[in-house]
Amino acid sequence: MNTGERIIELLKEKNIRLIDFADLLGVYAENIEEWTRGNQNPTLGQIVKISEYLSVSCDFLLKGEQPENITVKCPHCGKKINLNIP
Image 1: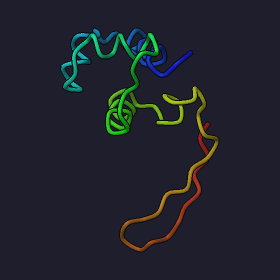
Image 2: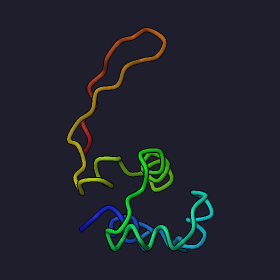
Image 3: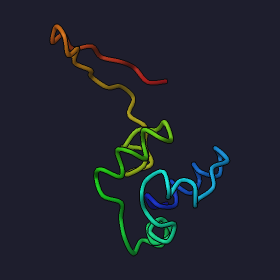
């Protein structure tokens, strides 16, 4: 499954219309359809927006895998925290 196919599956799961999602991203629905065919790929900026809108990681969109844990750095004190993702 490619990135575009994963996006379409997530839209179906969340009951979001393709045309509405395209408007939200500022692209044409045809662009997203091209992603599903593998003819085009979303830009890095679009991947980040898509992951935020659909509440999934960029890793999941790109590779179909969820990371087991991530390291987050506090912007105030600089302390790093390891988070386990179920």
